[in-house]
Length: 222
Image (cartoon, rainbow, N blue to C red; front, side, top):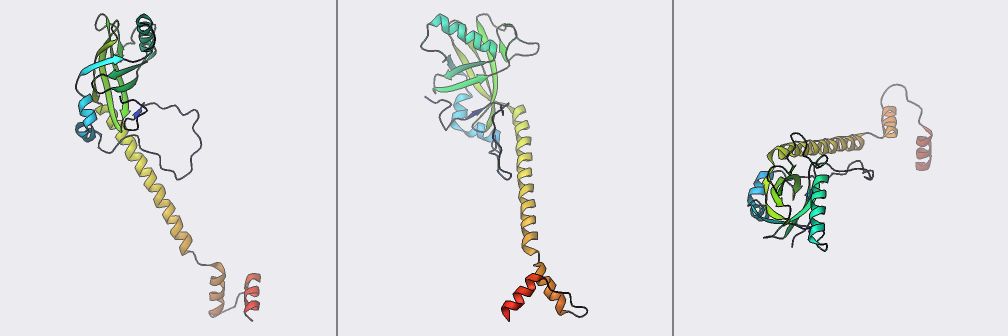
């Protein structure tokens, strides 16, 4: 069974909570959330190809509790905006997060969790990033049996947003590297002020008085 703890499957919500983020070093490169060509990976990756076909899904929460209690917990979780389902064929677990309902009723224009579309079922849509690709889980679950049908779809709208963020992130990182390299070159190419002072003294005209450091250097040579 594949779960979110499996390193081969990585799921990220679009809105991350940064309450406890620690300060980061100045030149650290933040790991990108998405791959450069998301659509190509979605179409070529074997796991995505299997999950993109509609197949049987099942609610996996509170499996040690009675069926009646699980039904109540499932509906409460949906109204709060989260649930857990698994694709039966592959054993892939999904932690779905979506827009919650208000007092058990869907919001105007919100169809991420719809109890009214079909009697005895709840239709769910959830957007997230999986293995570097923006995807959308779409399906329904029977409120009594707690099973249903679902699939993954490529989320083109979210992919465009994340691609733009990725390009900006790479450009900022490259600009910081260029600035750093320019500062390093300027530092390495800067002449020693004491050597400059001695060279000026060897040219024609008034000879500037050497600094104390030069006096010490000359006295040691003598």
